[in-house]
Image (cartoon, rainbow, N blue to C red):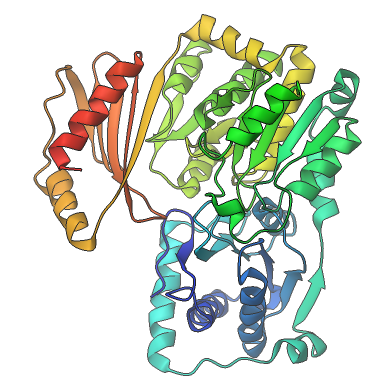
Length: 471
């Protein structure tokens, strides 16, 4: 029942996300830690605001205690990047975060981090799954009641948030932000970023407004993902209150959403392009970019203009952080809203990305909309169309056969340069555009993305794929 996707193990609460399966996963991770001889250093565990998240951490601690593995339990809801930072900073081999990130409220899950504060890669997660099968075959899993485990010294409750925030503050030009006097509205989307962002922005003397800051395990009956559809209220607020920008983060604060000074939603691709532009032009950095197969090729244009390279990897941030380490790239990100910058943690961090964006506004002395206009004048504009489709188990097998065995393609009416099956089926057109169909690694969805110089062309290419697949 334990299967890791692109962003950890996620499952529907009460269906597969159960106490039994959580304990099974923890038993498997304990076996892996012992096999590697790293059990003595313990493990750090955090949780977000989802239903059963805190209880799940306690269930995990109970099994780790029975395995005589010490748990450093962050005893209040926290951002996922905090756990990643702590694993890296304190040279731990493992960390855990109870979260389903941006998934619907009926989901919860667990992310596992490895040495260096990285997302566990495919090899690591496959080993955990294999240990889980062994643990299940062995039968009963031992555990020690939480309060007893704490009394016996197997659990230490603590809060390293200040250490994480101080690290971000040290790497951001806070003085420049203070001098700009920005008015920022924050939308934590009922998640965990409120304290972190409010603390940093207050230190930078920004005027701060908050919306959707309450603890709501249903996330206001919306997806806790900073998408165009979910940020309509933030767009309205920025425009009506004449704010400099709006900042939103997903449920566990590793993804970022942005609304500019005109009240316009900026796609995650725009944010990634903005920050790469800022690092190259204003900070004077040199280096490549890394993106996944479903992320804008505007990064490629920008990299080429500066004599740099843009690397393409499969979906999953573990691939981005690994390629960044290999190449020394200065930025890596995804069209779903996650990104990281060289010198920070080896994973997504919506809080750090937000502060870097605010630094960009302060240093450039321009409005966010003006910087976007500047980029479009230099590099042109690309339009992306995104579509998602639910399917049954039977339909999934049929779609997989059509795409990856029969390798069927629609008649696009545009010359094709090449086709890649690195992750899904991606068609590259000779005019520089592209379209991809791939299965989500976190939800039962087939996604189609297309990027073209004209929005109608992007819609048409998606439509042709849709028609061929019978969606």
